[in-house]
Image (cartoon, rainbow, N blue to C red; front, side, top):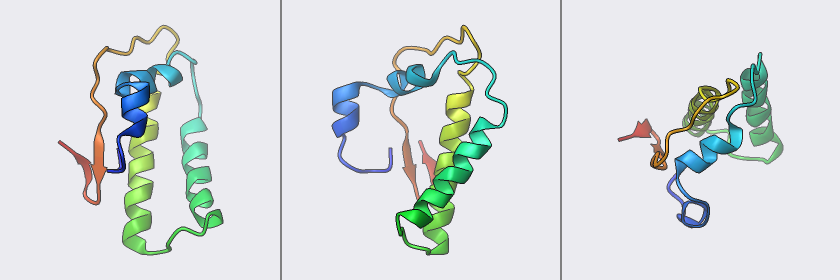
Length: 95
């Protein structure tokens, strides 16, 4: 998704598989925001660069990813087959 080697996609499938791993768990409350907060704090803990553009891009990516996953959180949600693995760049989601 972030432009690295396609090892995950090649071995685990497409975005449908990723979404299915997280689907159908029911109401999540504020879990998405708490996860995003933990992600941002983990960037600090891991010593990742403090560069504002880098942090903004990574936070925007994770905010998007959390929202994308939460669409399928309702019990009984159906993830469509064949969803392509998205690509994310400095400017956001790439088409």
